[in-house]
Structure formats: structure tokens, C-alpha cells
Image: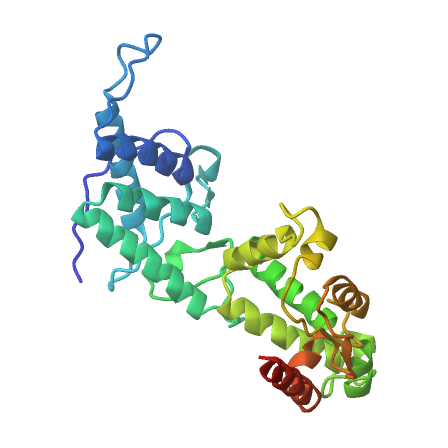
Length: 323
């Protein structure tokens, strides 16, 4: 596939793509809205007009993006060029993902046909390197080697790429911690105990079966769940307050006029039985707490249906009779 290339200018100083993209975004936003750029009385009168600077910035981004493209239109822009990063013996070419994201935003902000084409090519290339990562767990690394993209393959630039996996690793770790909270120590002990995973030797770098189980669920969630969504859901739960603007939790519970069924799980470490007891004690029309006996912790309400079903059925039947 032939590719049209923008005229390029030599840049004689170190330039960071992220800074250029940020400057482009600011200029493109003003251009898109038609808002005038306020005059700076202290500005150098010999400096080019803002529109010229923006055009040169986009030209620079075009050059960095087009520099490492394969024949199918996949491209990753290099993040640094010149100065310390380009010497006769060393040319630092990695493409950092956070820079790539800014470049995509900058291109979509101006929105010319070639801008959209380049933004799409960068986005599709990031999906390509993610899908072809040898670890195969769906993570996105901090940076990739664009030279490899020009050859139609993905290449990890070194161990430093692992430092960019904080979101993936954080989400996976959160899932592991949550899983040990949802379930109970009794279940884990009966199910796994101290059993090694397969032929692993935990005394020499291998894993226990319970570690393998938690790793599996961590990877499974991190692959399909967006970390930003996880943050929003977590903040929603942390800030939830039944008593807010109602005079406190006790007052809020005492204001409930409906009949209330409270069911707890004896091994629940996420919502303790004592909290269930409080609801039953302070809600005026609550029945005594019904407690499920389960080895599965908080997940007992999903698993112990043979216990929960009759309790709910009995309660609903009673509500129906009173009508």
C-alpha cells in the first residue's frame, strides 16, 4: 500500500511527542471553536503566528508517525528524537503508549482526512501489539519498538516495558484481594490447602494451587474489564452513605415503612453478619435476621440457593397474605 507523506522539516533540538501533541491540542481547540487567541504583549514579535506553529507541529507529528509504518498502514510514532536521544552510537526510538494516546487525540481534534487516517492507524497498531504480546494476557505495555512495526511484527523493547503495566497489574491485584474477601478461608483451605500447582515446586519458585487459581481470575478480569470503570465503581461504593441527608444511618433505617427481610452469610467478610443484625434491629418492620450457613463467604448468597430460595419464598408468601 502506497502512503502519501507530508513534507518534513529537520528538527535540531530534542523534541518530545507528548509536548508537541499537547500544544497541538490547545491550538486545534481554539481553531475548532473559532475563539481568538489572546495577544501576548510580551511575546517575541519575530515569533511565527500561532496558526503557523500549529501547522508545523502537525507536520512534525506526521513525520514521526509516518517514519515507522509497515506496508499495511500500521504505524507507531517514535516519542523522542534529537539531542541526548540521538547520538552516533545510539538512537532511542521507542513509542510510548501515553504519547500515542495524545497523538491520536491531537489528530482527531483537527479531524482532517489524513489526520483521521493516521489516528486510526495508530489505534489499530496498538490493538495489534496488544493481541500479539507473548504474555497473551491482554495487557498494554508502557512502550513498544516502532522498528518492528515497520517489519509487520511486535517487539518488546526491554524489561522497562513492564513498568507501564500498573493499570493491568493493579486491576489484577484488586481482583485477587477481592476474591479472597468474597470467599472464605475455610473454602480455600478445604479446596486447595497447601497443594502445589501441577508439577510446580513452591520451594523453588513454583506456585501453590491457590496462587494459580487467583492468578487465573486476576487475568480473566483484567482482560475484560476497563480499569477506569473499576475506579468509578469503587468510588461509588466508597461514597455510598445510606444516612446522607437523612439524619444518619439509624434515622434512615427507622424511616423504612415496608416489611424487611434481612439475610446474611455466616462466613461473609465483606458484609458482616453484625451489619445485617443492625439493619434488622433498626428497621421497624424487619423480621429477625436469617443466616445462611456457607463455606463460600459473601458469594454464599449466589451459591446457597437451596437455603436462600425457601427463605425468600416464605417471606413473599407472607407479604401476599397480608394484602
